Amino acid sequence: VDYMSAVIKMAPQQGQSGYCGNFNGVAEDEFAPPAPGSVPPVLVPAWNTAVGEGLEQVHDADNLFKLASPELAAAVPLVQQASALQVGPEDPMASPCKDGHALDEAEQACVSIPDTDLRAACIADFCLTEKASAVDDAAMAGVMEERLSDGRVPLFVGHGPCRDIGGQALRAVRTKGVRIAMECQELLREVGAAIAGVVGAQLKTEGTCELVVRPGTDVHDLLDFAPSGGGWVDADLGGGVGDPQGGLGGASFVAGVENDLSWNCWRLD
Image (cartoon, rainbow, N blue to C red; front, side, top):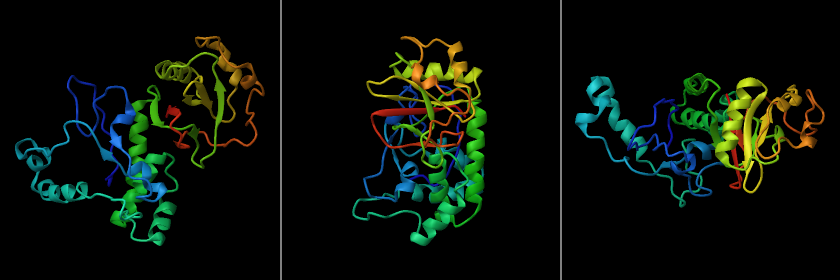
């Protein structure tokens, strides 16, 4: 159960495991999602269970929290108690929010957090603590994540086409032949480093990589790059600067996805 937001930066190491994952390049095998209907939809991104190796309790001799200070040592039982909580299908709406009013209040307080996962964590923290500081903590986690990635590392957002903070699609420009996830991420990294308006990428199973751009971006600048497999789909380059592709969202940030296991979405902060 996710009761806090934190950003931890660590280089891959041989034999790595635990709650931060194993760095095998497969982001979707780190957590098991909650049972369908077990929590309100807005909390799903923050309500998951870690899977894999290295999840056993840390021995006291290795526990940095207990070794650091008496105050942290006193907090350890509380953290362990929170981590032991489980949400079962027999309680279909169990969540940190005591009722619908509390959930609405939390959603309103956290509405300014653009990232879908961090916003869900903010809502969970707000309901659990009933403190407005949860919003500041989530916002700071977002800032830290952006600074650590420095815009150079594609971040996996989720399974589904990319969406803005309002759940709307953003403008996308398709490649003709980039069909492998790793190649799609490399293309996003390369083009995003040169064109500030490129904010993400999405790839559908048996489809081709699509770069997601913010409003006002001159998509003709993409012609300076030649993706493998034939370049860009000409129809997607029509309209040039600022053409919103009618009906698409106007936000400039990939905040989440529309759940669909046939798609992958990445973003550059």
